[in-house]
Length: 169
Ligand code: MG
Ligand code: FE
Image 1 (cartoon, protein in one colour):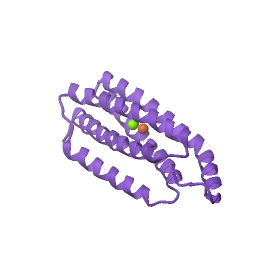
Image 2 (cartoon, helix red, strand yellow; image 1 turned 90 degrees about the horizontal axis):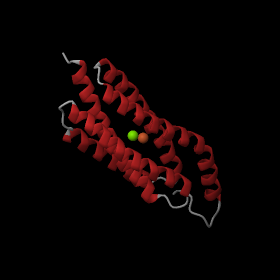
Image 3 (cartoon, helix red, strand yellow; image 1 turned 45 degrees about the vertical axis):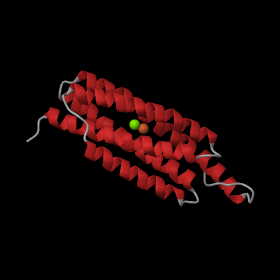
Image 4 (spheres, protein in one colour; image 1 turned 30 degrees about the vertical axis):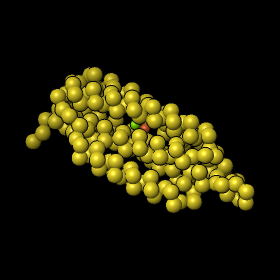
């Protein structure tokens, strides 16, 4: 059996690993983007938010008397590395990257929705509050990507059809 607190702590560790993965994915995208300055700027903003989220999660984990799992963090880093390498061989990486970003943000939204409920069930108001503030940032990022996907697609298609332009990033 596992107490509500045990589950909460596990899920906070999962979220911390997820945010480390998010950071390396976002950094990989931001470093490679050249011709899509608006997308790049929004990603750079979200890198800072993601680092703040990691700090908040760490505070929650430490308050509950836990430590972060090195194994999960490592697994996340390896996965992110694989995804970054995968992105390099795609001729439409800006579009695939924005799509993956949208999927990832929605996974984060699901994770924090679960965490808020678990924190409330554990009577841990500070963790619930931290997760609510993180959730707002994930929702804003998901919303931005959804709103800008059509524009990114149009810009990619125009650059793709232009023999003098590089489209992929
Ligand atoms: Mg995040
Ligand atoms: Fe996010």
